[in-house]
Image 1: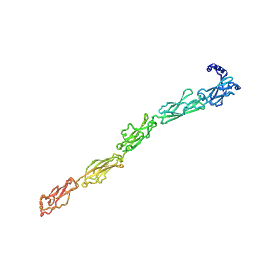
Image 2: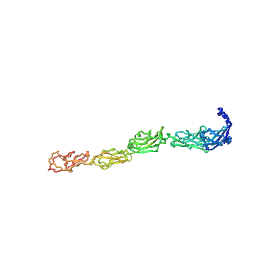
Image 3: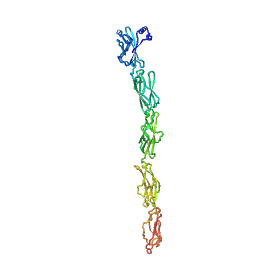
Image 4: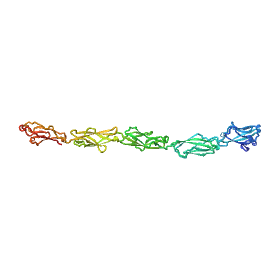
Length: 543
């Protein structure tokens, strides 16, 4: 529908000179302004209105007078039919192409009807159609936020743009559901809204390295059009996690005497942080025993614990190492763990034999079971390696018998002794442990069998028969006797005497040397008077 408005001749633009003033005077008498409205996106050939009819021009007059649009661009949007004065759309009208966004879109046409000259202005208002969806400057937005950022932090987002204006422009923003973020929209001038992302719950990179959100801009059309942008929030790591060992308990067993470099075990820890905040080094605890660091070392990168010194079960049965896992953050976090290493005994110590009591000599008349020596044995090893048996493997009249107290033994006689048969023994004591292979020690003790006067003197002949010449020289040895004794010492020192109790009294005229056994006559013998006689000599030892 056309609206006709008569021009007012007070416009200053038309008062710049005499010619223009005359023109204005003419225009005021014979011109009018017509206003039409069309929807954008009107197709070529669409009728805008009948200018001639709306101006009250006779259609027959148009046949003799030229009616046209003047001052249009190279590609006019409209054209008028000179025959009937109907105004048509020449090409598709795009409001966003011909008008500034947000302003009322009015296209002013200047038409001329000649003979006589009449100028008419036609104003065409292009009514906006919601033919554009909101568009963000980019399809994806990446934000990097430290996980230590406190709730309430604001992050400005690029607003969407909509080529349409008015109610068809962006009216609202919507954010996809998120526990950590909410959306806040601020008005910035006319028809402009600025979205802000608000952190409402602190981020945790270890729970989620990134958050994907969708921001939607919606215009006011019916139906509404919308545009979206993907927002990727990358959570930057903050060193808020200490290393955590993968096991609650670390324990190992290790043979004593393990050579340097032997792997004991490997500890392992993880850190949920990333970069240097999650890079772990292993070391001994600061309060740990410095001596242990001489026996073991730990690889700072791998956590491998290896033998560094001499491991001796007899010095220590187990070790507890304080291990620390620390990250490389600017302000490093660390965790301590105790590693228990149990040392396994190796049979590396032979038994030791100590003689606690010893009789160097034993009377030969000692009863069976007489104790000769008391010995104790001990082994620094443990278990079977320290279990000792003690014995002698020689055929001697002695035996080694365990006592009531552990690791104590008695060396005792197991048969009668006879000094005259053997007067000296070397007893080899053997102590052997129960290890595999077993170790043994030997100790030798010397035992002297002391003499007992258990042997009587024995004459070399019994009886003795001697021949003596008559008229013998007095005090000269006529013969001698000889006795011996298997004993020794005083028990073997023999003295002689003549038994004086003979009935015939012959022993009275003889005398014997008590030491040598030589016999001398105290008178001369006369064959005619005494042809033979008997007497007794007694040999006595000094026992």
